[in-house]
Amino acid sequence: MTTENTSPAIPSHPWVENYLEHLIVAKGLAEHSIKAYSTDITDFLIFLNDHAGSLETVTDDTLFLYLMHLRSRGLASRSLARHLSALRGFFAYAAGEGWLPESPAALIENPKLPRLLPDVLSRDDVARLLDAPDTATPLGYRDRTMLELLYAAGLRVSELIGLALTDFDAQAGLLRVFGKGSKERLIPIHALAQEFLSTYIQTIRGAFHPKEQFVFLNRSGRGLSRQAVWKGIKRHALVAGISLHISPHSLRHSFATHLLDGGADLRTVQTLLGHADISATEIYTHVQAERLLAVHRAHHPRSRAQH
Image 1 (cartoon, helix red, strand yellow):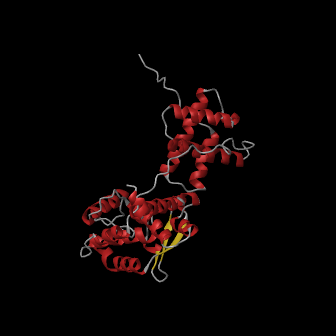
Image 2 (image 1 turned 120 degrees about the vertical axis):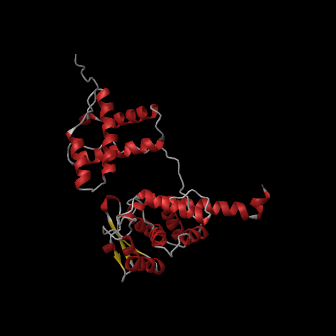
Image 3 (image 1 turned 45 degrees about the horizontal axis):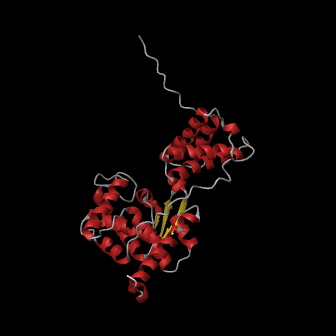
């Protein structure tokens, strides 16, 4: 006796397959990003299938009902916004291809999101963290160089571990970085970071017996993983006596905030960080405001008198 598999088939649609192929070929998105888009859009297809709907007849009312459906499943605003973002991109592409007269998602606003401010290290904390690795050893010198670059250039950890030897122009003091969507940008780094990077490449890196062309290598001579960088930073933060919960991204946040503190304009910081949308950079102005408010409350005589 055989048992048939009665689980429902996962719905698909040629528009979706075409869009995902577009994201791979034209946008150059990473595999995990493609999987996330596919998962979110497929979830919407399941909703349509359960409600006898189709992509060809989706309206803004359909999308509102879908968001209400997601909310009833307990999804928070941030997750709702992610689902809506995936659908907004898909329907904009469908309208651009002429499959739909217009995008039904164009006028739907994102759910209200809580503003989560990133952890930012003080300048003293950054200095202690940078001094934590033992530069008398190859591993320590490598780690010090990585920390210098994370803070000097505001790199994402994926950008740091992806650096190749040809991405550093020592004469110009520039790093060539490939960010999200393989978008290239050039970032100037200060003289001390240049010195550490040049010395590491010329005299330290060979101790790792390189098997790959990445700048930063593990003991086996191969490129580092994100986890290895994260663990290294946690270890050095412990040595430095930093109690704040930090990650590689903490140095990127600190880079941006300290630049704005020093008078850099928002557009410049956006370019250096590689943000496609300036709204992603604007969060650092909120960080500044929070810090100023905390200082005011702690030190203004009238503010202190109320406590």
